[in-house]
Length: 252
Image (cartoon, rainbow, N blue to C red; front, side, top):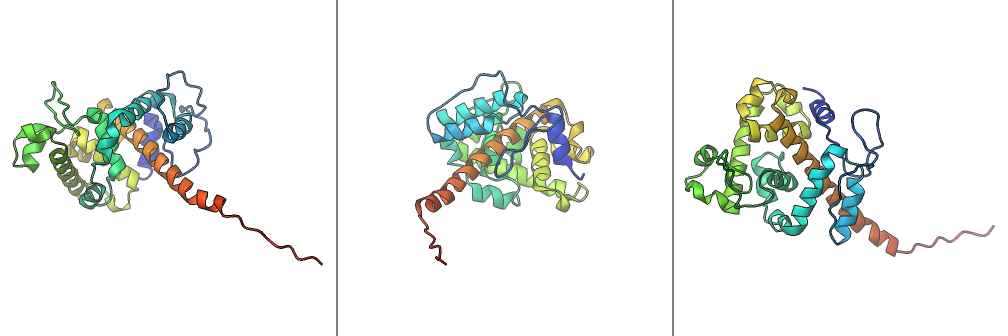
């Protein structure tokens, strides 16, 4: 289980940017050069400048989805991002799913549309909840799945249940890195917690659809964390730049 996140990210082509400067270019299947041909979707404001800076360091295969996520966020998604109860998610998922991860999952599942319905599977709502899942966690009729707040409640309960299941069945769960746990929770959401248990958390053995969801959700998640970190850094640096400090050099 050790190093699961790093192995899966490399295998799926995910670039995980942390809380600061983009990593150096490395040899291998990922292209960090920024020489990608996909068309950028730009939007106004300081956020777009930071987005472009981040975007230039992404592997080519993730840029197109991130550009779509940026467009969704700027056009209509951000108002739902603000409605996400991060404290509720963190408390119920034992600190594994925060507001940015919940939002990134919503972008992937419904394009941040609480009224979205999937004709093939019957999934409904912002986090594309299945009817069976809804009935396990809510007494309300499934038609209420298009209500953002009700869908949020059920989605949180479902992931809380998945975490409780996995922590008792995945070896050394408590010792896993947060990112490993996040990816297993996403896999449980898409593929089912029983399947994750059956492969002992080895997400290389998950179907393409599940690995694709993890790849795209984590890419968007890293992006929003990057923006948050940059904005925090800006708030901390600006007061220092405004404050002039003079030093008196003693004359010998």
